[in-house]
Image (cartoon, rainbow, N blue to C red):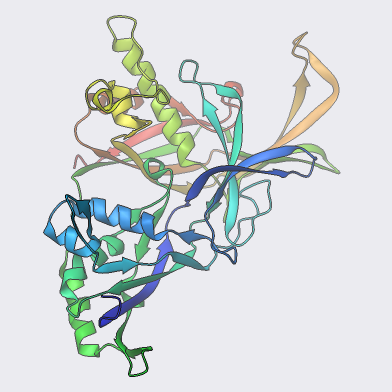
Length: 422
């Protein structure tokens, strides 16, 4: 099959949300203050350009297509009892072709080549607070980047590829943080190009543009092809800021003194999907604990479990938000800043932890946003009574606390729920 006639397909993948595809190694560097910082790096090719590995693309497409002869024909089948099947569709790594811009305010570490670093911290489920010594950075490819897509089809008929390209057209997710809305990619059909590849007389492969009529017929078929998707319930939360909001980028020292700087994207405040998911999980965990008739553990996301326990012994909170080894039913699909509010500067005194009094000469500022509004799209697979309770709880004129300084009045949002019921 290596020397068979085939069709090479190229196109452009657009990154719709921030992406992290990394290895298991933690790397270290030294920051501007001389402190060692650890971070999880993304996968790159030899020239340093970020990639989406072919294994990631193949994995998400294979799993979404489901079981059947069609999937086996496209992606092959592993050897069982001495038999197996070679894939007819070969995917290459997707390599970044154009980086996103305006990333300088997304991290206190300089953004380079469309990649920035986001801060993460492990949360103690028992307390809801940050775990000690668990702060780390993760490299992220920023939304808006494009990747060059390459595939080879060892057939001459294109119609069998329609379901695969329908999945890419409508969007799928790769990498880490899928439940938090990260790694969403789409492939625009108008960017697709098809080349017929045949062996030449001298043994070299010869390419020629595929007949335009065949290409148009395939694109027409693709436009009519619907991709398989689970039935999802879609809910939009409108978050209306009640006061200042701040997601901290860094603390700068300038002529005005020490000042915390906010995270920004395109001039607007940033709300991380991980913050929303964490706040919702904490609220759901509290609601589940209130309804428990006896003292039970209601959330242990990082505890190691066997397959039988993952199938049968998860709590309502764990089934909704996921645990290690089992993805949850709820996903933060998208976050939009619909009104950035007004950028303001607030002054604060440092507090002596021993006396509870203000510290002498320790005055600092916080540059934050006054009453910003966000919209958060959630998707939930299946019926979950705990999710219904969570939405009903927001209908009691309650607030959701997000970002920095919630214990001092920052990041308080009223929540309005729009539920399509589907």
